[in-house]
Image (cartoon, rainbow, N blue to C red; front, side, top):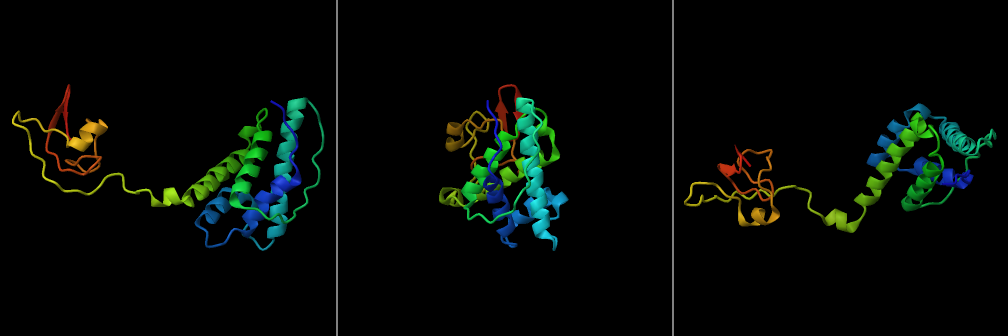
Length: 196
């Protein structure tokens, strides 16, 4: 695996996006909290963002120096505006982190914090996917159908749940099927008797 110093615009894409992230965006507070050391909400935001950028580029140099047994000094970071979409921000951040994954760099607090921010950005992207938006949130439906026991006296799962093979899954609400919400009483499961 080779390693290289990323262009400053790679870091600037992330920082510009972070700078212009609307204050009403829920994820903004999470990201700013993760990067709390830099006090990105302060009045001196330009200096704080520049400090974050300088620390990022220093970390990149540390990784490359480790990889190639060199001792190069980091360039001075110049904070510049970059017009970007969130997908490009994620890709740029991932590229940066990949280039920093040398030696013990991944144990540095900044690296770990940026990995957390990467996850937050991924979730922001996922939240905007139409198919995700339409997907059902609840993990079980609130159907309150009466369940009829078979003549043998053993309780069985409803037909749908038998197909899903959910026998033996414990629910949060005792006596209801985890998958469909059908009310159940008691069932035997090979070796154990338990509520499902």
